[in-house]
Amino acid sequence: MSLLKDNLFLSALTFCGLIGLVGCQPAFDPLIDIVDAKSSTVKVDDYTRAISLVRSSKGYANDEFENSVSQNLNRWATKLKSDPKGVGVDWKLDEAVAPIVAEFEQYPIVKNIDDLTFAGVDSHYLRQSDWCEAIVKRVTSVKHPLTFELFRMSAGDQVATAESATELNELVKALNPDVSNDHLKKLVDSIKLFDWVVRNTQLEAEYTPTEEEINNGRLSETPTGKPWSDGIRGTGYNSTPFQLLSYGRGDYVERAKLFIKLLEHNDTTAVMLTVGEMPWTVGVEIGGQLYLFDTKLGLPIPKEKFGSVATLADVRKNPEILNRLDLTLDESIESDNKYWVKSDKLGDVTGLIYVAPESVSYRMRVLEQTMVGD
Image (cartoon, rainbow, N blue to C red; front, side, top):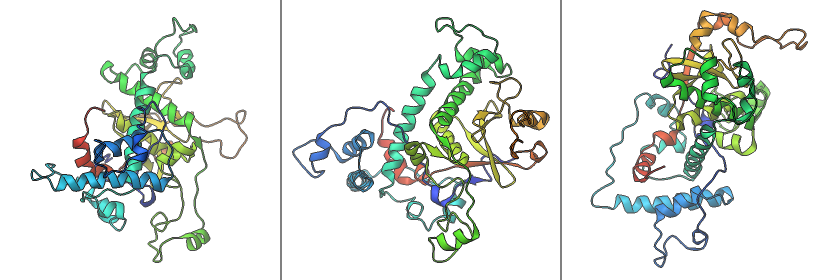
């Protein structure tokens, strides 16, 4: 199975990954609202003004926000390009990403990937990055989350008082004894971030457009045969991650993309596993294994007890892990009471990565070099 080299998880309408959360942000400077960027009386440069706008918690109409940030960044970039010392950034498009960039080069956000010109949507990408950091720092810092009470009970810790409650790290270790101490924190952080995504986004049903909807709803004059390229809504690209966080609802693939982006900000690699062409579950790479987090089920796939997280190797070795997820007739009499992925299909599993064009662009590489600290 190729995890990172052969497949790229990109769709035209969600090529730009955006994540949103209002967290603890620095105080917003009111001068930003009233001082024009060209003013010589206020010593706030264009870069600082743009980043302050991105990090502020003040609401904006999209056009106002996008224009303000991109205009400030482009003024900053113009001055940078005119510097005799040059920009000073070596940049080359990653070979693994180049094929997908070529496929989607008709879109402006992709076409200008090697240019030092900022677009309006870059403002959302920058805000996404700031919010991702806030989410990850807050969620992973919690040591005694009440939401994991079932983990405590599953691990056999019956002490319910806050003073003596076992920390989540110890509970996860007890439920996943094969995880080394070196990799334990990554697994615990992944469980916390996954739980946060599931609790904060309402799951919506997958959507498959009908032939009539495809013919009547496409936005492109020349059909490509790919609904996402023709502007037809479908599973996985109805909403960007930013919109998912803003409105609190999305399908399981959109949930998966949000989870993957949070993991990325926690220095953790994750892929979207597919069975055939059907997206299945997120595989989080920890210690050379892919731990399975099902955003449709809303749970990490349990290996044995609740709170033990199965790996792809586990479910291939023991098909009963997936079969145990079926509901009995006592639990549900609905027709869809069987787990939706069958163990005999696991021979055809592919790992797909999710990439936003901004994240591999020249302009963002230049901007990143300017940033310091967080």
